[in-house]
Image 1: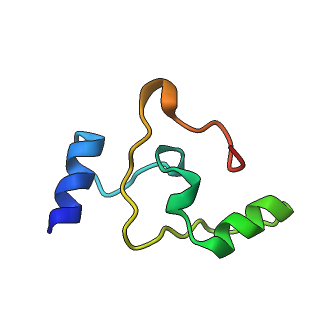
Image 2 (image 1 turned 30 degrees about the vertical axis):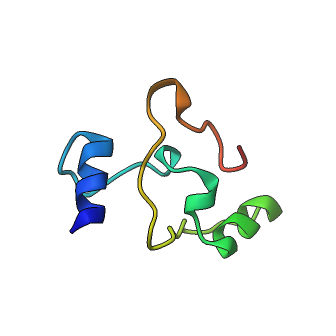
Length: 65
């Protein structure tokens, strides 16, 4: 429940969809990051403790930054 509150506070809504660009690279599983580095297609997988923290000018612009 505490993690849900962090998400809601972070994204300012109760929506269930959040763009991956709102997460730091460390928020993603190591297999997701490896596939991105190799240029392989993949469905991004978040770590269980991931919380969206990047907003406004801080949003990532690619999967490698």
